[in-house]
Amino acid sequence: MTNQKLRYGLIGAGNNAVKKHVSNYTSLSNIEFVSVCDINIENASKVASAYNVQNVYSDFREMLKCEKLDIVSICTPNHLHADIAVYALQQGVNVHCEKPLAINAAEAQRIVDAKNDSGKKVMVGLNNRFTNEAVKIKQYIDEGFFGEIYHAKTGWRRRSGIPGRGTWFTNKDFSGGGVMIDLGVHFLDLTLFLLGLPEPSYIAGSTYQNFANSTTRNRNGYKGNLAGIFNVEDTAVGWIGLKSGATLHFDFSWASNIESEETFVEILGTKGGAIYRNGELKFFSEHLDTCIDIIPQLNSNIKSKNEFEHFVNCIINDDILYAPAEDGVYMMNIVDHFYRAAKLQAPVLFESKSAVKI
Image (cartoon, rainbow, N blue to C red):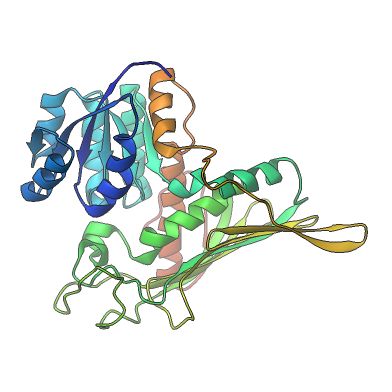
């Protein structure tokens, strides 16, 4: 790491932006936080004041033209990601974009093309890749612990977790979709990343909208408006067949009649298996003709990789990104095919590098 300071700006001054991006970037000695942009200038001013930042904007184009930034976080509603990222790259700014990279694969590809033209870097905010547990599972896979992996399961299910009817999350024009894009992208990406981003063969699945009119299933802190738009799914379940012959089942919900919220990744192999549930990791295998459980003692205070320090290092040292924009295109291609399959209520085949009509 050098003593070089990167000029950093934030676009989209919501709670997630502050808790995740701003708090982490401002903890780094080689970041100078110089500007905040939000269409709601009061939100931008509030964040700027809290971090002693002088320059506040309501127009991202104006900020990117004036500030000569090195790096920007994009934490806006999903439908704005592509336009902002492309413009930032054209201005010579590296981009850290919250997931999903865009609302569909075609929009995500626009970002990759702009990145390639600019020579700058784009990283997707896939924070689950950076946990100690994910790094350890990947290590076990790479070292052959699992043998041949033939099936995986993943999910993020909430009992009450709707992000407020009438917010941008529940409006498809702004979000691109419901729980599949909101929660699903996190753990579907993690599972496929652990498996080496394999080539899919087909996908099948269904979407459900069962709690759109509920007044009791909002996530804590999110207020809904029953007169607001809710034209996305609150549950998404599906099945992916991989060209390797392995399969993957997924189950995501904002609201379900279940005991409690859970996240999980389960990997099944011919020699070993693993379950990563609600942040706890266990491995399973056989030794001396006996089934054994392995519970690794991971130091939670020492991150194997830090998402924000990693991106800064990659910019300064031209290192390889752990969550590059190309992976965002890969994921959105899967999401596009899933929505198509759910609409048709029939499996959809993956064609090589082709867009899918939803």
